[in-house]
Length: 228
Image (cartoon, rainbow, N blue to C red; front, side):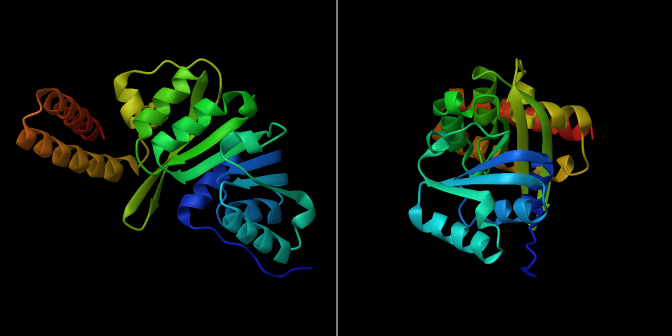
């Protein structure tokens, strides 16, 4: 019996919480495989499918899970996005990438993802990701903010279904706007600083459309902060 216990950082811990317990889980772009190793070791998932476009990353994941004695419950596949999945899992995770890339993987892999519940963690461009989920027939059913050092990561969970969201909901998150968790305040302050910097750049460049867009975003985040 292996006595090595996997621990997760705050970001991966929240992702693991949203995965919950299930028979089959897939990690698209698994990198080192630490999340999958934790979920298998703790018994939260019965089987794990780990995929990555990088064969070298997949070797790291295979080695870690092998050291833990869990290799018989894991499947490893090299491939880009959901095309490498094969069978549809109960839950699919795509984390640690830009929101535009995750949006592309969801859009291109919609058929392969089937009825899987998605747990997504975009590093940037959460707006674009939420809009793609809406357009691809997903309903956002949970959102969390994971403070980790100086960063605040947003994690989005969605399942097939109809979701219609306002511009504010796409920007902030429909669940976050409704529930207003404590972590929303520091996240909103950071997003406001980002938007104000972008607005200053747009004003320097004289791009009227960009100025209007960033002014709207700044106003939105100020409104969120006033409600907290």
